[in-house]
Length: 102
Image (cartoon, rainbow, N blue to C red; front, side, top):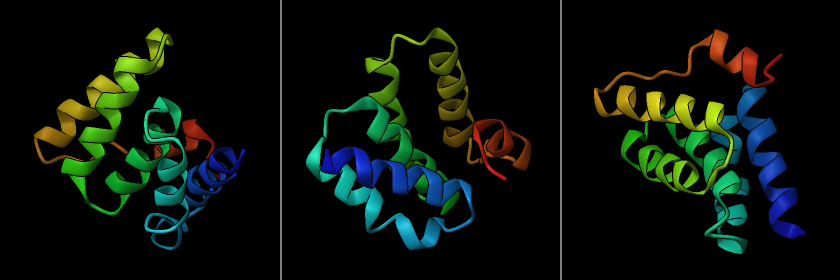
């Protein structure tokens, strides 16, 4: 339960422009409570990518990719990993809007 609450704060905070406030607190706490949860690692990966921590974001997205059954999300994250490995942040405003940013 705590993991889900922290994860929600991590995800929403990242999408609403408060990533620097949540990446080292809410996101880390969510993963601490559920380190193998792919969705939670996906949220932290998003936050990490947004603050420029590409290597750590790649690690989190890879956990998500291995755990998800959602083919579309998996393909999207695989593309993100490829971009991040090339030093390019794939999280454009358009992508963030599609994820729920306002």
